[in-house]
Amino acid sequence: MMRMSRINDRASIAGTYVAFEPTPAMEAAIAAATPGSRQPSFMQAAHLDLRSATSGSGEQDDIWLGFTYRIPGRFDAEAMARAVTRWTRRHGVMRGWFVPDADRETGWARVDLDEDETAFVARDEGSIAAEDVSDRISDDFRPGCNPLGRLGYCLRAVVGEDETIFYLGLDHSYTDGFSFFLVYFELEALYREETGGEATELPPVGDFMDFAQTERERFREVDLSHPALQGWAQFWFAGDEELGRFPMPLGTTVGQPVELEHHHHDLLTGEEALALDAAAERLGTRTTQLVYAAIGLAGRDLSGATSLRFLNPVHTRDAPEWLLSAGWFINVMPVHIDLEGGDLVEVAGRARQAFRTARGASQLPAAKIYDVVEQTLGVPLSQVGERFMLSYMDLRHLPGATTWGDADTVLVSRGARDTNVTSWVMREDPMMYILSIRPETDEARENMARLYTRAGEILRSLI
Image (cartoon, rainbow, N blue to C red):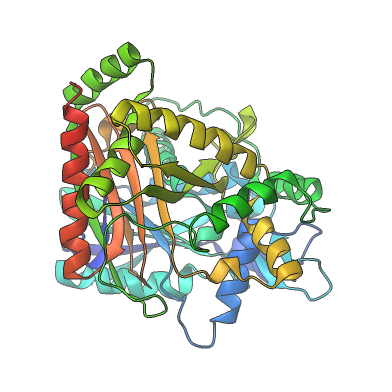
């Protein structure tokens, strides 16, 4: 099962600290590289703007995404360096970075290396105690995962006698959450081959930066008359001009961010989830619709909520070459589910219709919608304080998913400050569970546990 935690809560080991760095030839290529014609995607550009605006304060310095897993047995650092080289050559987005360019439409230009210019080497940096690992990783990832002017990712390992813990950190401009689920399978497969194991046949993938150029050209000329804007407007004005709200009080105040923490909640066992599938088929609905409806009804039962409003991440991997490609293939769509009256099955039907409506609003990248609205109406959607992100991800058929638990895979971050909640309902064979990032307040802890416990009870009532 995939877990999520702050880096300082991830248990480590004592051992040799190993860094994977560009070879001297790659460093020379980096120094000589010049910007090309490509520009960031809408999501990348918004992220880079935020990075740049806060560069003086350091506010965004620790906003990296991390992934870590255990490798049993004797570790071959040179083999891992070769695996990392092959992986970064495979994914075009990993071979470049961004620099400011006031003459470009986005204010940014992309600098890319050729595949054969990309190569990494392992460097022994001495011994480290287990209790010092998280601080050392954080210290390395803070500058190493900054994409402004240089590669924005960082790879490290702590090598013990009988096992190794591998760490990968990236700036968000390189990846979405789904891409992380593929990293372990690909790196582990490549490493296994480099240490004498079975040859790896990874399917070809496209370069996300090519996708970004196509997306930007496709949506270059957009104004308030676009149908997607109407869907966002309806959502906006139906909810007190906010972008969703967690159904229970969080003990926070808009504009006064607090530290965030991670939360894991087991919703259903694997057998219960299969029984829910059967119930959904019998009732003419879908498991995902029942899950969203149960979360909404839990809010209605516990706090009198009359609607469930959230932003739902959706992938934009709309062609075979993007399915396994690393990149930020994510958009969000606004979902409004009416909770007034009705039982679970009836509200599940409303959820189905709400998603149909929301798909119309997702025809444009959300970042582009924010730009259009801010430029024409002066409404800063990107700075709206109240929002709730909620999604459902069925991970059962992803490559490597069945071995995540044995490999002790953990998604890690340094932490952040906010007033809102992001929750992912995750389904694996053993369990359906909810991973969340929530405000570090007593009220948020209590109410999130109450809400998701009640949602599980509602779902079990159908089994």
